[in-house]
Length: 252
Image (tube, rainbow, N blue to C red; front, side, top):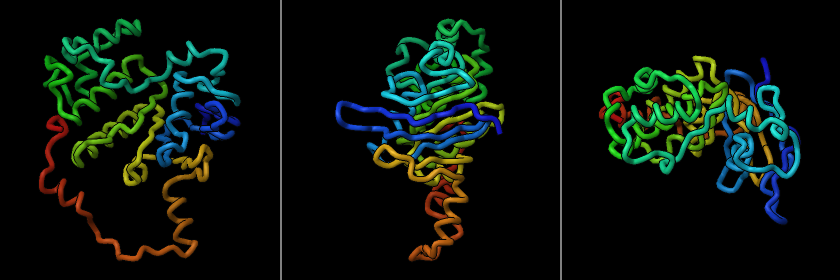
């Protein structure tokens, strides 16, 4: 497997507080890599450093063979970062927003093809504020793809979405990976990490306390003698909800 991101001895201090305490990990080309942890664990800080949005204190970060300290501008050209709501001009339609961003990236983009990829062709003439929560998140992910990135960073992309919209977004993320794009994702939903991620790093208090595939982590826990106090059913309440209310992706 080819390493596309290498992080070595990464440290980030805020005054005397050490938010990230010398962590090291690799991300492989074409995988979905999860960065998990409780609030304050340091995962968002780590993500923002890799995105070139925050200065590190020390350590080395290599992205696609480029040193973050030496080639931040070149790194920005090959990554996609999920924009926040404030990044969208309220008076423009989705079609016009994609055209605007493609001009800023100096890229030629087929706006309708990109909207089709995220099942929003019927919303091309709508404004961002007119979309549902799931549609907003899918459009936000579409904007990360405008510059044809090798890596995209998604920070808690399904927070606040209903179960159907969450699962639709999972499928979109899997489809993006299928096209060869590496995905780095943070999430507080463990079922999401288990479904999506090839490997996950679990952070706590600025340290990586475990790094492996979800299956291996679960197997290791079971082999240690861990047992759930209650037998797991073949389905859960979320499955019931989706079975009863499930609709196509464009409705969410």
